[in-house]
Amino acid sequence: MAGVSATTGPATSTGLSTAAVTGAGGVEPGTAQRPGRRGRGWWRWAVFAVLGVYFLVPLGASVWFTVRDRARGGVSAGVYAGIPSAEGFAENFGRSLALGVLTVLIALLLLVPTVVLVELRLPRLRPLVELLTLVPLLLPPIALVVGVRSVLAWAPEYFFGTPLAEAFFALQEPALPWVLVLVYVVLALPFVYRALDAGVRGAQLRTLTEAARVLGASWPRVMLTVVLPVLRTSVLNAAFLTLALVLGEFTVANILGFETFPTWIVRISGSQPQLSVAVSVLSLLLTWALLLLISALDRRRREEDPA
Image (cartoon, rainbow, N blue to C red; front, side, top):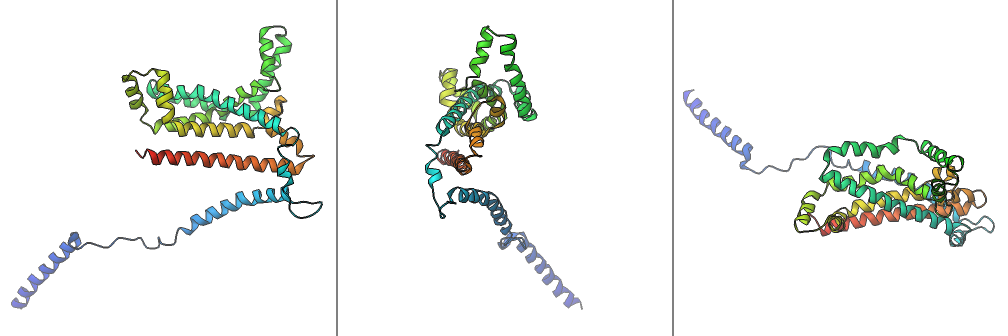
């Protein structure tokens, strides 16, 4: 018994030491795999399929409505071919595009210096600036436009014959209503600020601006040659969101009595329904094309500057 126990003892200890060495990494273990993980990616494709159906089915139905020829049967693209020559299309689309460009320029001129100043010099004011830019989301657009209309009504009632009344009348010029630009700038503040603030947080703006200043660059040159290139994608995103807002905004223009691209689409929907739907489809496709363009530019910038 003693011999057996003596023999068994070393063998047992040797077995334990070998197991300990193996478990500690003496032999490279296989790659750990979670059971049941394989094949679970199907739900992602299911979500994409549902979203695709949700977006593409109404779009396809709209396209079919515009190309179907009810009189002679079959399919015709005559509605799309007649869009450029449609009465009021060029005028109203050009007006909305001009309003969008002016809104983008004013919003960027206001917020790009503000975001840079808050990031570099006044970081304690960031919560206050964020709160102020959120006010247009808290205030319903219908309340904002009713207030603007009440203020504009003061011109003929209280300020008639004064320079202030002339300024109010100039803001309401039907060819290019600047009052819409001012209202659109307010409505676009939350989107423009969020886009720019995200770009500033992700860039080493303080280091770059200090280096430019040490090299003797003035602040205007720093803004043009350092800040704007760094924030190029954020500026493009802000411009895209603002332009999409202006080209699709209906309530403010309709209540103030101005005809823009969206109000023109609604106006012709009763007499020319196929034309109005065709223009809406093209506007949607144009918006998607701009979004894809911005994504492509962002991807190209990241490939050129991976750091």
